[in-house]
Length: 105
Image (tube, rainbow, N blue to C red; front, top):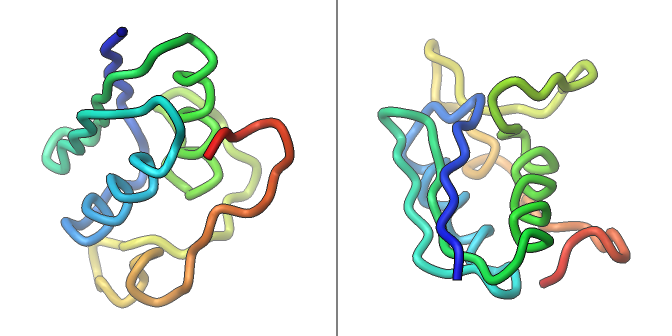
């Protein structure tokens, strides 16, 4: 069992943190997920390096890419400091799309 910590981008509210935790816990071989909203990072246990890659892919897919990862014109709506009306989880039905082999649910 491995423990990883990933600093992430775009985490703005507690609702996002709660929903993000729920989504990450849906991945196979992932447990003990903690989202640190104040510091914008995710920590979790996983069984293999492939599981780590799956979490990183999911974070990027949901609009919370690891720090340092460049995203191409991210057009998703996430919380802004001006209004929580833009929360990615509160205003949309965000589901993990069927991506074939890249995510193991």
